[in-house]
Amino acid sequence: MHVDDLILVSVDDHVVEPPDLFEGRLSKAAAARAPFIKVMDNGREVWMFEGAALPNVGLNAVAGRVPEEYGVDPLAFSEMRKGCWDIHARIDDMNANGMLGSLNFPSLTGFTGQLFYTCPDREIGLELLQAYNDWHVEEWCGTYPGRMIPLSIPPIWDAELMAAEVRRMADKGCHAVTFSENPEKLGRPSWHSDFWDPFLRACEEVNTVICLHIGSSSEMVITSMDAPIDTMITLQPMNIVKCAADLVWSPVFRKFPRLKVALSEGGIGWVPYFLERIDYVYQHHHAWTNQDFGDKLPSQVFNENVLTCFIDDAVGIEVRNHLNPNQIHWECDYPHSDSTWPNSPEMAMKFLGALPDEDINRITHLNAMANFTFDPFAHRPREECTVGALRAQAADVDTTAISHGTGKFQDEGIVTAITLAERLGGR
Picture 1 (cartoon, rainbow, N blue to C red):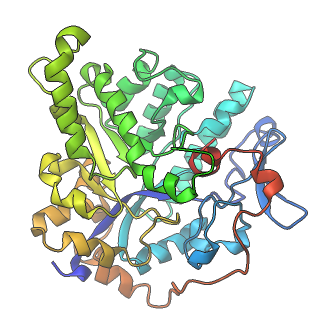
Picture 2: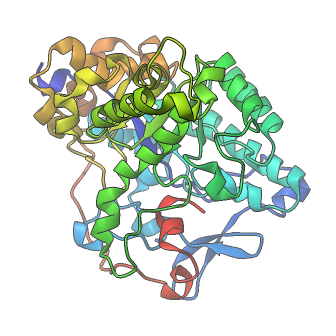
């Protein structure tokens, strides 16, 4: 397959929410409590909520910046590429990258929507959360039908409310919800409890994928306090193996056998050994640990229920025969620092190019379409969805990296108030 003939759908990108996202969507009481942008004395812009600053307006929103200025510090909107927060510019950037579809995780709310969990008034918190979901589906995804895969955030303080919101969003065409890889780290019950059953049941019933992004537990791999940040960045994708083990040995998939869970940005190269290991553990220990998978092995359960996702994983592609071929997905990660934008097609073909066209198509778009209930071809002919066709629409989009003349780790007075995990993974 030629690179221009690829069709790319990413199941992991990010939106930096615009300042006006709540406008016209809230009651007077909720509008008075809603997050808002404040300009600091030094010109930096931060979201404010319940009297506290949320200092990651530009959480890794580094697309279009020279690598020397990458960092995790907060940025002003004027220092971000417009595609980070403006849907029209985002579509331009997707076209320039030859990318047809995109699923976008939140920034403001944390990966699990846990910002609204911090609101002491639960009714206000729920109204803010639902307003966010409505904005995401109606404006961020609805402005360009067939280009965005909707993703909702859940009210994690009440599993029945979570179930109701999953169903409400499914009625709006949203069949993905973001959640935590380890909810216990957020002060909520673990995967091993029955607390989440109403939520899980709703997801299974309406075919909603639960997306577990790395860092969604607000916990990072910190080997030592003086280790360089490169250590954490290296280990973070593979850290999701803890979530994979937690889920497989929990009762979740045995109670809800049709449930789909995505390990977002987790990579796939580590999965074959993980599958080998969980089968070995089961065969050697289940007699005394009392695990019972019936006539299946744990690896079979994983391959039936877990969607795997990667940005750049040549080794994973080499060993893909150990995974369910219908549940492997490609990611772009725009606008974060791991992103392959604006050269995603070329980078992907370095390790996909030798595969049969059938496998390439499954990994790059068909699996995403099937598993996330996403049909871009209902909105435009297939021949207009290719890398070549989309890039032809973006001939005037400048993707040259620029410098804003700012260094890394600014606003230290704010940044030191939060942990490294919070800066990178949520709140």
